[in-house]
Image 1: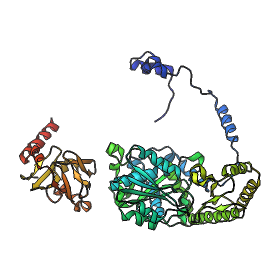
Image 2: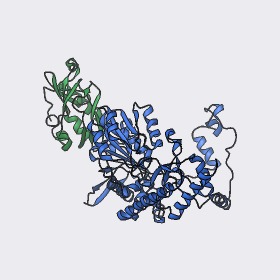
Image 3: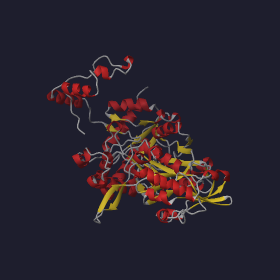
Image 4: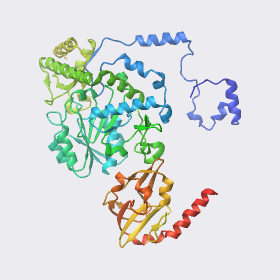
Length: 448
Length: 133
């Protein structure tokens, strides 16, 4: 489809074809009070040179040189220029849904590779072509569990990303789903015994995140056993995909919902990202979204198609597994390219650096008088500390020194005022961590 | 394929074979032929209550997914587990080995409204003529 401007003559011709004299007459059925009676507030028209100057000026407003210790669901990781070079190829960048297998083998194969990588990473058997983002993937995982179990009660850990839980509550509101919270322990994790106490045979899904919102690692085994003991499914949410380079994959989970942003996608104002949903093969017919499959063509050669499409809305209409999802093909492709460049060893190395640097940062912060660790559970690249002063005030000081401070936990957890969620990735250098700890010390010493 | 005389048939192309208060339900040869190659059947678990005229499962073929409607109300006793591995049986033996579910009837009087074999054959033959017209 091409977008071409119309001439006045062409407009008249189109109006004549439908028997209208003017645009005014065409829109006459719209009540007067809803009509815009002034020109749209759009500057210009500008010449090409003026537009280039305009955008150069806007770009110059960006300030660089900041070091970030903010994670909380979006992570700053190294990205290769190769990723952008590949996803900007016209065949990928401008292509639409690959319904016609005979002309879209490249796109379908890329999606198939993405699905394969996601299965290998998550320890699951089937992954789809991606979702909007991690939060909607988590909600779709719960809806999938509802269909699989025929139950409507959901237990979601309070240590799951607060915004993911908000998205889930939004969907639950008018769909009959009952969402309850599982408290976190003094270690910052879910206690399998406490979970057992909440479980009854009416629970569809137990939703946990690992590393959880506080950065702490949950132990899937015990949680899965508790959930399964009363027929509920375990949904594991992952916001930091790089953790899978070191942390055991959630093979015990029935459904995994993950945010793929950490793989080659820049934080860029919070999107676009790519959600991942993966599960066991036996659950595939209740999985939402598009699936690429491998097949053999009439000449016996390997080929790729969209498969199990009877779950989807263009065939099942209102009975589709989801009418609210789509994939993020280009972002999923970026993740695929990124992971292919990294390789298995590269991912492990990257994850190892995150862990070591986060451990170092915790040590440096604990040297600062008054800083205490909040939870004692093992963590990956994020951890929680309590400050003797408001985190917001400390962050205001940090930003003056070109440091983007940690997430203010009090905004999402009233019980954790003065607690900060610190994130350190492979992009952060030792010198930057030391400068950060020094700046925190200075901020805490300043009189309020 | 012959339509068994002892079965009763719905306009949605399901058959029901009643023995006392128990009944076996499947889809007709006409239905399987219209669907084409069947690849999957989604059936209710034992204990599920089904209701006359309401969908209790789906049969999926390479070209479509069709709802299966209950010819009578009852409680599911058994679903045909062999169809998981060999859904193509629905194409080969729709009136026999490819039965879908067994139920315990809760209201046998509902069966009065169903067609017998000759009635059903006349119904599908009229449908065929309609399609040709």
